[in-house]
Length: 259
Image (cartoon, rainbow, N blue to C red; front, side):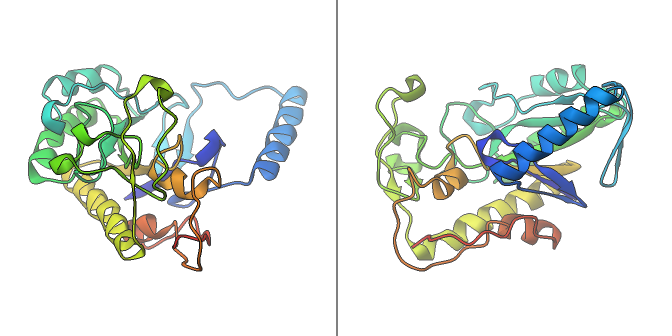
């Protein structure tokens, strides 16, 4: 089971074995500068050139990014998704499924898919099969929105959960976001476990790998951003835990004040 970790701040990550490790901003700038300089002195690599990504032999370098469709009614992927994804699949091509909630608290937008129940797993299976029939490689993006949600989308109308109790700026992205509830220290391992179970369910559904959504202001990013995370104390959490529990190989080990 391969694991990609989506990188906060939309910085290109570095692939190492089965995981992708985060780069710092400065090292990423140097990386791009060095590669752009070398590219100007040599021929660029065509997009249709094969590429080996861990255990996968990709036939080309064009990847379908995860694109939220809002068509999974009651969080259940629908049969038409098999047509949608298979139409975009190519032999040896990589597709990443739309952001998929890891639990019933993970939803921030209506009709986004889930992966925390047997019904979700069973609904994903024919969709994954349709991609595999085209020879495609299919990853699932695991997602928890944190405070980017509202009472209407949370179980029993409860407050969204986050690293903070600070609400999102009103009107941000046109959403009607509800004030969040700060997670207690004792609750954090449960969130980690949600990602672990989601990865197991993805395996059961037939996916070839998973990507952990760690950017764009969602839950993991809410703990990483100083503008959002106003917690104090000395509690450490291994951000690679969701990946290490899935694969036995942690790609990110970041100490952070989480209490």
